[in-house]
Length: 179
Image 1 (tube, rainbow, N blue to C red):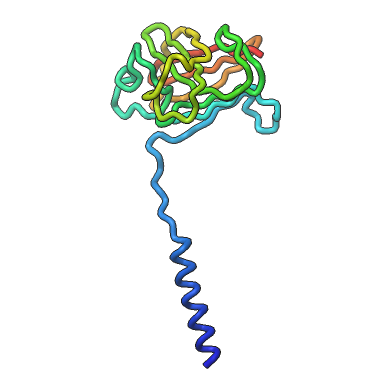
Image 2 (cartoon, rainbow, N blue to C red):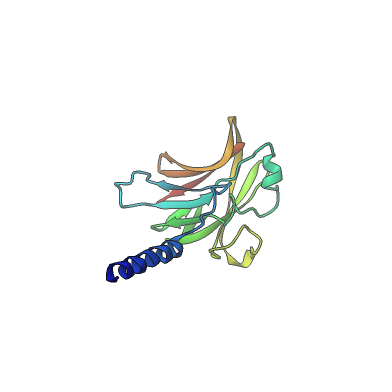
């Protein structure tokens, strides 16, 4: 009788424990998060910059539809990207203190305005306030023969520093960063 009671208690415990740990997980995000860093070698502990951002896809739409010229854009998908500088840098000609900032942009046909903003954890650019800008820099927009379906950010090492290169469709925008 004791054995039957013990087995019954164990069975009930297993049933309730299984139900307590059951979890529904959401599917894959349509615009997945990504990261880019300089230097990109994971063995290097002396990072200069890292950015976390969402990667929207064109999916038959135009860049101008998704990142409207002349309007503040979140520079990706979902939350505004967060860019962390691990040391003081010169970002597009402006001195920037080490820290984490939201990255927003204003796309243009020939030139983009790149904004470092102190309001973190913001969805998109819906709550953007110009008064929270830390810096605004201009960067030329160029075109490339290769179209990128997903918005992408990469760092390209150049003499004297690095360029943060943003690309989508055939548009490329590079912001110089020096240490």
